[in-house]
Image (cartoon, rainbow, N blue to C red; front, top):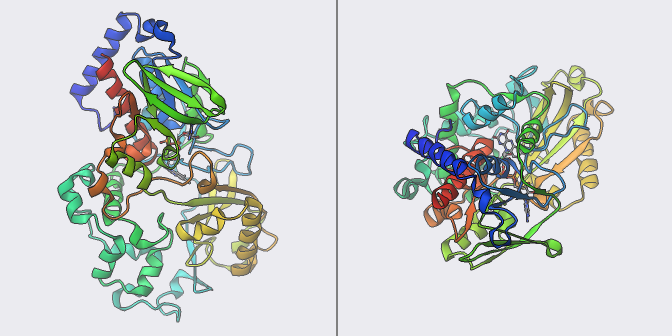
Length: 474
Ligand SMILES: Cc1cc2nc3c(=O)[nH]c(=O)nc-3n(C[C@H](O)[C@H](O)[C@H](O)COP(=O)(O)OP(=O)(O)OC[C@H]3O[C@@H](n4cnc5c(N)ncnc54)[C@H](O)[C@@H]3O)c2cc1C
């Protein structure tokens, strides 16, 4: 059972489920008023699929409406690419109770880390070097105690040893937010970080600039890591993360409309209506929107959202990220004697040798400002430039790495980013407004989770939205 559901809520959920089933299910009233379903769930990512599962289990007739031609959203195992890389979410944390429960329910296998741990060569100010050379390198402009730290471990000396947030959910507490909801860079400067340190600390951030990120968000992530640390290691689903969403979809009975981008949602006293591109319209008692905020901001919602909620939807920022997967033909690291992976302050911040059940590949991950180039160019140009830059900074890769697959989430028409984060002041300004039900419309999706993050957060949010509907319908 998930962490956000206490015993009392769970019993109430089971009780309501039993009551609905005994009455022949809420679907029994589906013929009234020309409804297409009791609930329409928008988006067939993991939060939409899980919302639909929970609501069906409670007896509702559910319809899923998805803009894309495939299910999964930000879960996207590339089955036909060498090594079967994961373009989206795939690491299952030890605290992912809901994900793990579904893995078990569908009889899927799990495995731990495969192969060697990631070891980085450094590429700083255009010089490639082993991490051991960093402390005395001319390119190391860090002062004092920071010099000896590998640049990817700098944050750990500047952040508090333990997250000062009292609990996993404390980041939404206005009092806590009042204290920590400030620009991350401002805090780091106050801890002694100079410009040289700040430029290294910016590498790999989701935000384009360090001060666009709230310290509160960093401390939330730190808190989640602390909880996970002692609970066990990361796990991965055999055959890829996509196997889970396929199994979830397979368990559903209601209609799934693919290729159906929602353009408008209307909520009235008698029901809710969803309008898709091309004029298709669907009616139900309730709607659950799991659409990323980047998309929701362009959807016409009638009546309009209250001011704070509208501002939250419009302004909560999303990170940018592009994954490029390059098949490895020969072990180039044996040629130059450096560790296989690269950590860089240049155009390719992270190049990781990744080993999977199906083989190995290089995973180039371009986030934050390093992703700007990907956002503004077609994938083939991105691939060409990445290959060229890789060979330039690491000549041993020439002829030993093949061009592969580019997945730029910022350009994905139905996601438009990687995941929501919070800028300075966002939590104080918006709190959890993005998750507040509006008329007959309920909101889920990773951007609305409070306790967990990522895949587990998406499922937590689905559970909350399903409960909300169950409570008002029951
Ligand atoms: C590169 C990357 C790596 C990640 N790695 C991890 C990881 O290892 N572990 C982890 O826990 N999390 C990870 N995550 C995060 C995780 O993938 C997400 O938190 C989770 O998949 C989000 O699920 P969701 O259902 O909230 O949203 P989504 O999966 O985005 O689902 C929303 C759905 O809505 C659909 N949609 C959008 N617009 C419309 C419209 N107008 N009409 C109808 N449908 C629409 C979309 O097509 C999509 O299917 C990663 C994310 C990325 C991008």
